[in-house]
Amino acid sequence: VVLTCVCRDDLADGGAKHLARSVRALKERGCTVELLAPDFGGDERALCTVLDAGVDVLAHNLETVARLAPMVRDARATTERSLALLAAAKRARGDLVTKTGLLLGLGESDDEVLDTMIALRAADVDVLTLGQYLRPGRRQAPVQRLVEPALFDALADDARTLGFRAVAAGPRV
Image (spheres, rainbow, N blue to C red):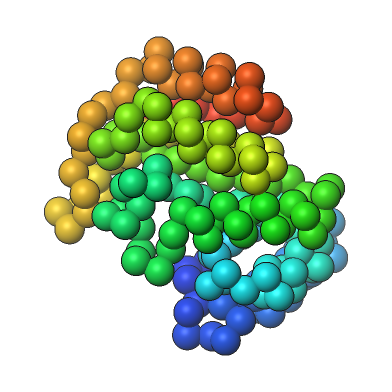
């Protein structure tokens, strides 16, 4: 089961207790659980609340490269905080699978993508997805380029060389 949530900044723990209860209920039913988690405002106690519930895969999407993050992500969400969350999750539970995703086509350079992948591996992230950004509405950033399938393939090869355990990359990922 992939469990996702909206950001719960209105709750002191970012929704961690509720997510932990949900994870436990799914685990009691024999499910493997991937949680697409918020950054919990950088609160490692909230993160550990979820990890202690037995989540199998902790996913937290970087979404884009650091230079573009202030234009694309919520102003409270920083690349540094996201990398710290993923690294803290792995430190807390070495058996945990950590996962993140990037959307390409927002104006990032290929070198920025590679640098981001290196930073993700330094945070011990296991699984990487790379997909094509598609503008969901007029209020969001426009598409800067359609990434060729051959570039997705090359980036996936680079990611595997860097040590990611699994990579999914393509225009429809």
